[in-house]
Image 1 (tube, helix red, strand yellow):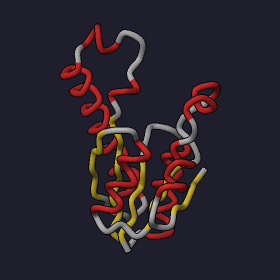
Image 2 (cartoon, one colour; image 1 turned 120 degrees about the vertical axis):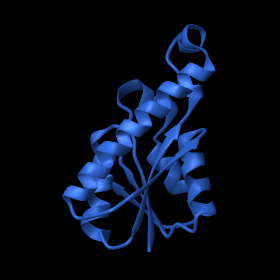
Image 3 (cartoon, one colour; image 1 turned 90 degrees about the vertical axis):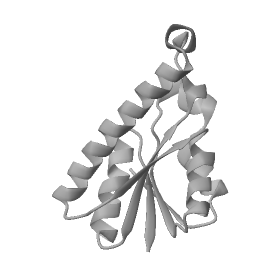
Length: 138
């Protein structure tokens, strides 16, 4: 079985990775992090520019993947990693379709407060759009 773990830097995201390793440690696990430049902070484009902002997000993803590898190895699990670009739910579902993923594991939410209400839950969007089973961890 091939699992995709959608990882952001949130506790539910880490719970998704821990679930995948605990329940599917012998299966193929790909940890995916979405980079969406449309989700930039106020003035970030003007201050940094697209190239530098993308570079910073890729550096953050590399650090996130290193931490994910450490956590997975501590649980006797090995992972592959991939960066996807675009709106997170769409990019994750597209990756799953293009790479013969059998199940998606995602944290219950990565946002909090008003932004979660206004922008919707990425996990919910993945559940609605995915063509494979989705497990939501919290």
